[in-house]
Amino acid sequence: MRRSYKFALVSLFVLGYGKLHPQVANAMAAGTDVNAASAHDISAIPPLPRGKSTILGGAIRDVDPVLDRFTLGIAGEKPMKILFDERTQVFLDGQKIPLHDLRPSMHASVQTTLDGTSVFALSIHILSRLQPGDYSGEVVSYDSSTGDLQLTTGHGGEPLHFKVASGAMFARKGQGSFIATQAGPADLQKGTLVSLQFQPDGKGHATATEVTILAIPGSQFVFTGNLLALDMHVGSMVLLDPRNNQTYQINFSASTLPSMPNIHPGQRVRIAAEYDGTRYLAHSVSAY
Image (cartoon, rainbow, N blue to C red; front, side, top):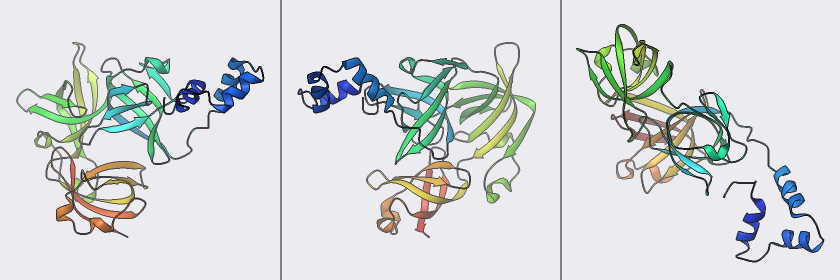
């Protein structure tokens, strides 16, 4: 396990390519109890990263207990690789469960922070079924005649079904140019990112009473903050806005952005982008 401390002795052996690591060999030669050595390694688990935390919602996929990581599918963004280890706390429907019980789930809320340049899970809250409360996702379809709304938490997976109440409140959230336009049911087009507040209707269905529009296809945004990651080959970058500690996955085409060779992680950047219904696509990138 790449980040696991519980099995430190095993890792030391494997990294020695079949030879005992000197630390283990010395302990055995000295007659030291192997369990005591293991306990010592566990006690050396480093403290949690102290950076600000961000809560991300989505679907957990591809749980890898060997590399201690999983993929989180986030609506409107590229799936994100998140690391975990014995310091990560996992909850199922509000009850704490062992870390080894972590499984793929359609509904999860993950409290994350940066551990160096990697995203690390402080805690993982999994819902075995849809619960009353808040939900964020991407519109798959909306039927204005019936109020039927289908949302997905990311790429792939079965959509979730809601009924939009006839008197539901609509609002837009975000930057000034975006929220200047009044929100309404017409915003619920395919690809729109939304956040819902809903209540059970007593028949096993969820009725949305408040709908917040976060982005609609074709809407323009300006992002500013610290560039955390940059991949010139696939045309992807991750920006952290220090004002709200929110990270954004933004795509780009290097062939249309002559400034990209001068951009590198660690810089403060300004990015003008458009949400096209599946991703944020940069039109201009500049350091400042």
